Length: 99
Image (cartoon, rainbow, N blue to C red; front, side):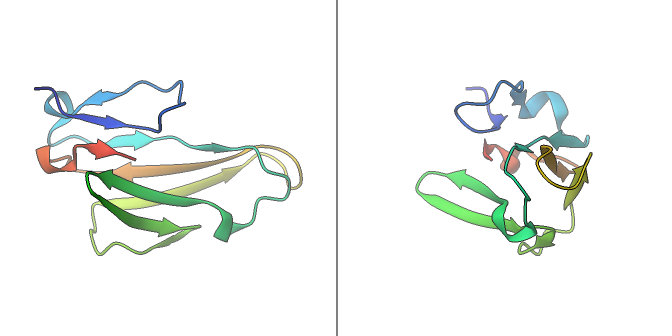
């Protein structure tokens, strides 16, 4: 079976087949189109049946996994969409999950 790093069920972003990116770095993008996005409003989760692990809250990592980081980009202050990207370096087969 293929293992994937999937980005939400309604995402239009591509899914990665984990086997094709093992030992590489991937960026899982998230665009938040909220007015006045506040750091605590965006959270990254790792969803594996039956568990859900919180990876980050805003710009702060909760996970102890040093391979993960969160990058925040905002074009404009106010109503412009912001990007909250999850970076995973040195991808492992065990990273297969929905994020």
